[in-house]
Image: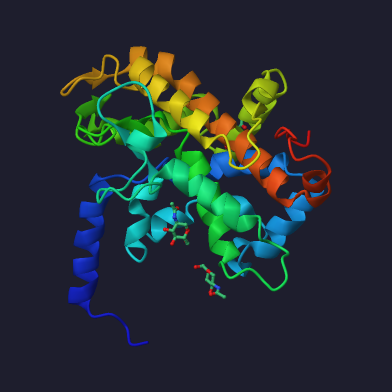
Length: 300
Ligand SMILES: *[C@@H]1O[C@H](CO)[C@@H](O)[C@H](O)[C@H]1NC(C)=O
Ligand SMILES: *[C@@H]1O[C@H](CO)[C@@H](O)[C@H](O)[C@H]1NC(C)=O
Ligand SMILES: *[C@@H]1O[C@H](CO)[C@@H](O)[C@H](O)[C@H]1NC(C)=O
């Protein structure tokens, strides 16, 4: 392929800067953290299937592919609404009311996507071979399970999940959605984890030893995932913590940070545990056959 012309590059830059406004998801860091936690809780069978499906560029690590869905937002324009769900300004989530894209197509939201890619991955190992690109199914699933845990990804339509609420994060001007996708994570990493992602993952994993994760794992659904419940939790947290005291023009500082970072940490950890649960249930063939009503328990 010929090298792109400078004008084309400039256009691309402008387009991506504009796109950055309607921000993506947990930022890159958030997705990597969630997936690094998930990797630790995969069963042997699930870990093997994940290895088989990962592209070579992943270097054998699921976490490297977890930001992927944000990088294809232009190529796969249809997938944009799959990163979130909007409610009509209320603190509860109702699938039939809230899970659709802007054209009103049902299921085109983060909850529908999680169930969709789970169903596709259940065809892994079928013969004849699945017609889905299961590498993409895995990369989408891993990303969206992260997103559904970001409280402002299941939030109000009117302000686009906080994208239209301009605040200051300490001195910096930004929007509230970005604060939750990126800034709180950056700040906690700087203050508590020596500015390193791996130290943060270690810290979160250490907390998991003492947290009661069996509650997070409780999911009796057999045909779909419990993504709907995770969305209900998210919009509740959006109202109770994200939107609260964060009106347009507010300066958010220590007080906001100190009471919100534990929520962010918990949602990242929950996303990781639940991604592992979903993958274990998908790929653990022996258990799948043995007991159709098997709850989604993590391996450790
Ligand atoms: C399900 O996955 C397919 C393949 O990526 C995609 O075309 C379709 O839009 C997806 N639907 C949902 C609800 O995620
Ligand atoms: C599956 O999707 C990945 C990621 O988009 C792509 O690199 C790969 O070529 C696709 N595989 C097939 C068989 O189309
Ligand atoms: C903090 O990280 C730096 C590398 O970025 C490392 O050299 C240093 O030893 C770390 N400190 C602690 C306390 O882990």
